[in-house]
Image (cartoon, rainbow, N blue to C red; front, side, top):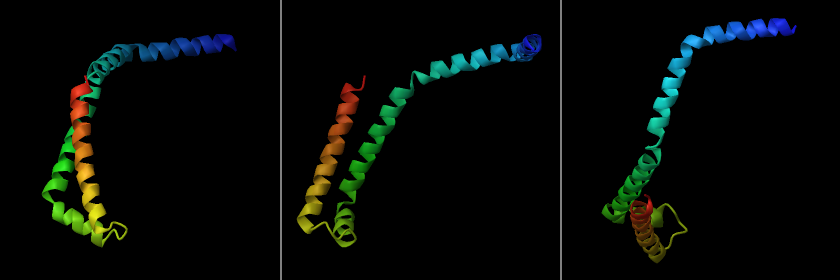
Length: 102
């Protein structure tokens, strides 16, 4: 039985040997491009936070109308406070990601 396993291993390795260099090249290419992944992730988070904050500022009236009309548990002053705090927190998170994300 051990002899059959050894023959199968030799056959399997001979079949895979031509693809070894292709696999190693792909692995090297993937490892080179993965080092930029944290920077791309930070960039996408920053852009999303900036876009959301500007959308809230530019559509402030629509946001207040939505919060007070469709979300019944937001009374009038709480909606304003919520949106202002939301814009401030998003801006602060964006600045901290840009500043400390190195």
